[in-house]
Length: 393
Ligand code: GTR
Image (cartoon, rainbow, N blue to C red; front, top):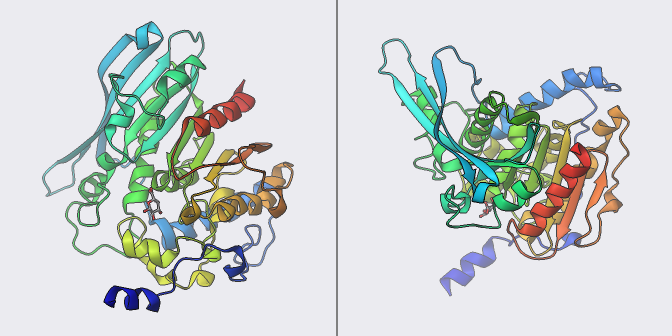
């Protein structure tokens, strides 16, 4: 009875379209000084402004990858040219960072990137990089265990390279321990962190950029065709990685929901307050200011999609995954259209949401809503690879 009474006091999540509050989205093309962006050149300045707003209010500021106080090395700790019965070359690459500040003991950090490259390819190949949020068994380099989350054999058969990192190696997915990775390497044991300091999502995306640093050194990888991809919390990190690092040619969000592709102002399913309460280690502290005050955000998530423009982006939803707000995920893509329009790409309108299991492709943008629940499946991957085929082949 006590539980019942507590429950009733806090209104439950919104799962009905007619309960979505009315809202007005910030215009990605209108600068803070009132100027209107009308060209790709003018967008550069507005883009920087939006990026800084997301850093300050949502994801926090991450450090540059080339800080002179940090030495970085890529060590190929295993190379198997006859992996997958000869179809692929396996490379396990350890990204090692060593930080030497004056007066402080040297700190080290390392994480692994697993890469399979198709042996049949004569030219450098495009690569899909998964930010793996689940256990490392999903991306098993021995291939004793396989998973639909990372269909390495299928990717290789289609001529793609496929790679993965474990997000927990960059920042444990734990409010008490998230600093025990790359954040500690950079900051040491700072007690007071500023309210716009980076946390786990930004740290995971930072790792994607270091994987990209490696791809740039691997002659068998076409680093101009790297897709960064994640599911759910990994999808949030992938979108932010693609915003922070313009070297990613394609960004794929699988059911990333609140703080990912879904518009915050809709308050459908998971809200800003709900996500900050359960996951205080994902976004910077400033994001809490918008708990139950989404209207005050200087950005919304359509502007995160816009930061990827004019590069390729694919957003995917699942119809039973209401917590992630499928329609809100689609609308972010649609409302980024004005920015894609600067390069002459057609508009995706709010009414263009495609039927179930029918991918939509408009220029460099893709979307599907799969029937089923919150997961990353073979069906999703097939749509991503089909989309990449149309972009790159
Ligand atoms: C949920 C969380 C979502 C999403 C999901 C996941 O509990 O509320 O934002 O990130 O976890 O990562 O599977």
